[in-house]
Image 1 (spheres, rainbow, N blue to C red):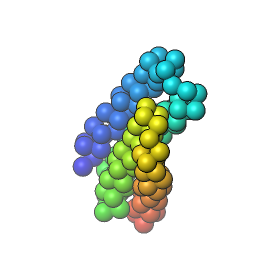
Image 2: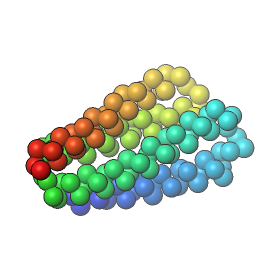
Image 3: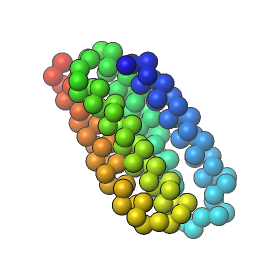
Length: 123
């Protein structure tokens, strides 16, 4: 599990850097400032949680358990739902897509809670 999480984290970070560069260089002149701000929020949380997956991988090795596995899955789902919906919203302006974002945020919060709970029990 740890090696997969490291791979997911590394790929997520590569994608976050690419998305950030695309926003800064390819979208800056094309998007309204409000939509560019949504794009930047998506990139920021994408990068935070790419690094978070690396933390989950570390925890999976040091403190294995079902909750750490859940944390990894929730973090991946949260990144997809939160950042993914914001990326699509910034590009399309479809408000229906933006309604998915809070569910992604809840997954991200739950992933950190699961990681903390797993580690707390093992300490």
